[in-house]
Amino acid sequence: MSDPVATPADASRPRSSLIATMAWFRDLMLSVLIAVLVILFLYRPVKVEGTSMMPSLYDQERLFINQFSYKFGLGEIKRGDTVVFWYPEDTTKSYIKRVIGLPGDTVSVENGIVHVNGRKLEESYVPEEYRDDRPYGPKVVPPDEYFVLGDHRISSNDSRAWGFVPRNFIYGKAVFVFWPFDRLGTVH
Image (tube, rainbow, N blue to C red; front, side, top):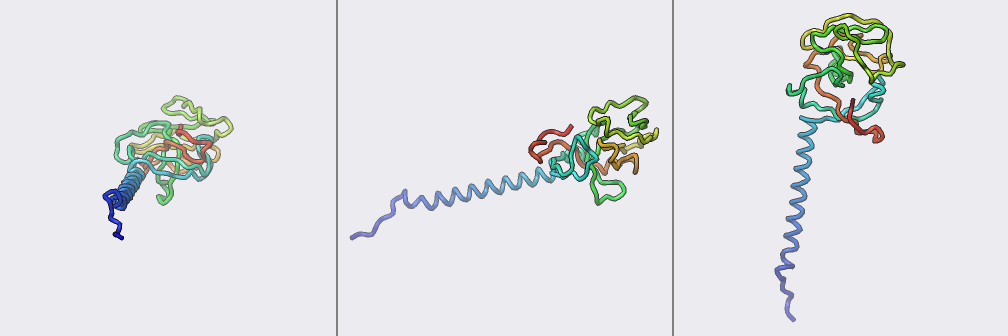
C-alpha cells in the first residue's frame, strides 16, 4: 500500500480558503473605516427629542445631519434650513430648530405671523393651529448669529425665549429621516 499523495488541487484548498478569509476581513475593516469616517466628518445620526419641530419632525425620530458643510464652512446657512446646534444656555444639550433670521435681518412676530425685514415670511411648514400669538421684536440679528424657531410654535423653546444662536454653535443641517420607516425621506 502506498500513502496517498497530495495533488496540487488538494494542496491549494486550505491556502485559497485562507486568502478568501483574509480578503473578506480586509473588506470588512475597510467598510468599518469608511463608515467611521463618514459618521465623524460627513453625516451623523441624531434622535429628535420633543415635539417642537412637529409636523416636520416628530419625537423619537432618527435622522442624519450633514455636519461637514457647516463644520468646515463649505455651505452657508440659509433661511429655512433645519439646523442642529448647541443650546446657548447649556452647551451640553443640542437643539434642532429652523433658521428664520440671518445676520443683519430684522425679525418680528405679530399675531402668529413672522416678519423678516418688514415682509411676511411664508411658512407652509407651520400649520395654523401650531402658530403662537406671542409678540416678539422687532429685533436685529447680530453678526455671526441666527434667529431660530421650532415649527410647533406653541410648544417651542426657541430664540424668542433665549435669544440668538452663535454661528459656531451650529454644527449640522438635518437632511434625512431614517427611522421610523414610514417617515423615511428628506427633511424639508
